[in-house]
Image (cartoon, rainbow, N blue to C red):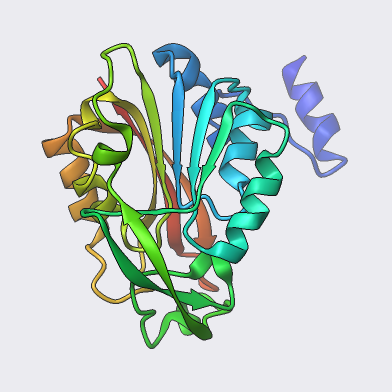
Length: 238
């Protein structure tokens, strides 16, 4: 019967595939959130709230979300996305390794804005809006200070999308990392910014220092030659 179904679908240029709960990032996170019992989400580098919406719509997560976005203009979009959701809190802050104020490079593509300088060949690797429009002085907090002492039953999902600043955020989160059960981080397989640690260094830090293990890898962007530029890496505490 199955070969007949396959032949029928191929006649319409379709194919039958086996369902897996790991096919998409949303499906994978839905499984982990339920399995681990995540009860708080930290969305660092929230931009306009895309990840928060994924957690609500695709993952089915109904608990507390804290979204952090330092760009004032983009923060307005984030607050609009969270409007009407009493458990989705928004914070006009950057996160890092120390509490301070620092200039953030504002790029035409606001999801590319960073504390790091774009590399000279960034547009060759990935054609995007790399023009620097100016800087914005932003407040930087550490997750350890922001969250304070957490109870052992607080199970966190930490998402990082900070355009090359992820390890800085993790350095400032050392006091709460034992509560991080699931971590989602955008991993750069090709360097778009100056002075960004290589992928292996980020992964080694998460595995050897914080006891996390890689459970999924989901490409975010590809170069014209089909190679992966960035991918969301999902890590789980065992």
